[in-house]
Amino acid sequence: MKDYYKTLGITKTATVEDVKKAYRKLAHKYHPDKGGDALKFKEVSEAYQILSNKDKRAQYDKFGKVFEGGGSQGPGGFGWNWQDTAGFDPEEGFSFDLHDFGDIFEDFFTGGVSQTKSRDARRGADIELFVDLPLEAVLFARDEVLSVSRMVSCTRCQGVGAEPGTRVGECFSCRGMGQVQQIRKTMFGTFTKSGICPECEGEGLKPEKLCNVCKGEGRVRNQEQLKISIPAGVDTNQLLKVEGKGDAGKRRGKAGDLYLRIRINPHRVFQRKGDDLYLKMPVSFSQAVMGDDIEIPVIDGGTMPLQVPEGTESGRILKVSGKGLPHFARLGRGTMFVELEIKVPRKLSQQQKDLLSQLKKEGL
Image (cartoon, rainbow, N blue to C red):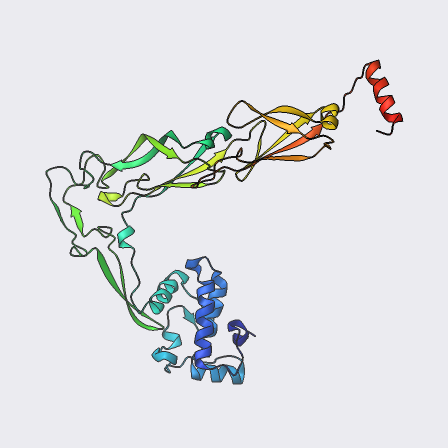
């Protein structure tokens, strides 16, 4: 037997307000249109319908189930007869159209009229492209020329969607309003929902004759070469937004945006960690023992001097400030860390062996 109290996470002493509060919280969590669990949403809704109705709750508390559907008034002024409710079968139980129920749920919590998205109906789609760069390329801001396949405004109709010289008139379905209304009777009462007009897609106007080139969309697909500025210091997986360079909108609608996903190629010498660079530098045994001035590569190109201290052990890391990569969107550069690796020679001359034997005798 289903435990409706457990489903809503409340006790048997819960008030009507407690039931409503628990339902709203769980309905938001499991709402299928918001990526939730449709089965859980159905169970929560079923529990709410039982426990929010005084008569049904009394029957459930006494018998563990409800035997017949009454027409009593539920909490908050919402009344319904269960057997008149769409989706209820006295033999099979509850069966909801979750898509429609999601619309009702949205209406319930927005005061009875859903918020429309008409202003976005004609907006062009966003585009995402990958941009591969060598590590050296992030040292300075640069311009990249990218080939992009995107929807652009139709040159024949100038984005209107109508054949040149023909009339663009008021949409017959919405009378130029761009929106239509639906009146729906539900278990929660009667709701009026405003939505985008499917005929004119929220524009309120319709061409008398569609453009021969774009077929009324006001846009066509085109391959374009776009010059894009990439800032210094970008990193792998960083997303750069270029407003208005996505697909053009339908019939002069707002254009989408272009997003550039950065990918930095691995470097053969340097390893990157944030804005810092790591370099492994081999030194000879004598350089490590006695110290020396060596030349190390830098990401900018060329080399720079570095002093190896006396008595350096293998694995010691020296820090060189300001020789890393530029900080993104701010001044300064990261640090270069140089790890010293002592080279052990594989072949020694007799003289070298004699010298090492002498050092060994002296405990070095």
